[in-house]
Length: 162
Image (cartoon, rainbow, N blue to C red; front, side, top):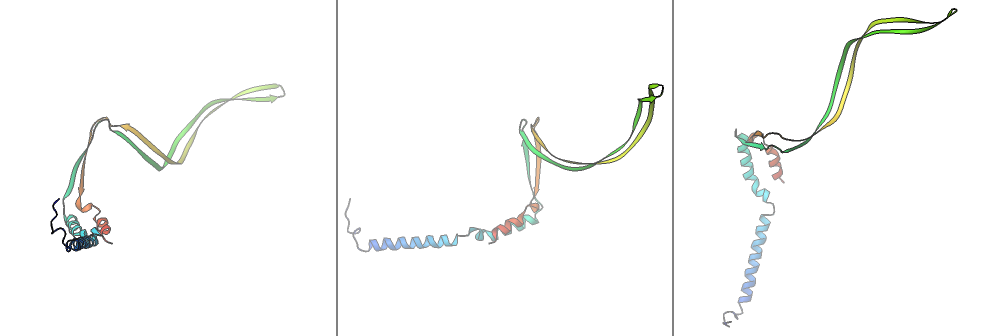
């Protein structure tokens, strides 16, 4: 290795130390400025959000669900119904009645022929969860269209404010 007098000069070490301190200070200033990047992005995001809110444009996308895709979801049911019962109940029977008489025990057959009208409202409260577990038989094509003005831009703006 060459031994030059330039590398042995007494000013090299303090100059290297000063350069390192300047670099460290510059990095510190940069980190201080970037400590909250959302504050720097807020004006640009605000302008974009305002433009999107005024726009009549939409995001259009088509979702394709191939045949054989497993489908699994639960449908909760909490429904109240009133079952109106309006009917007549026909009665057509013979009743055998035993009689004790002084002449002995006798059985008398009494025919009963009648109709009983039934008028009743029956409240029914149905609470259940329908579990659907199946697979699609055919391909489903679901077109999606999301209007830009319908996006939750206020939540985006609030998230950027400190």
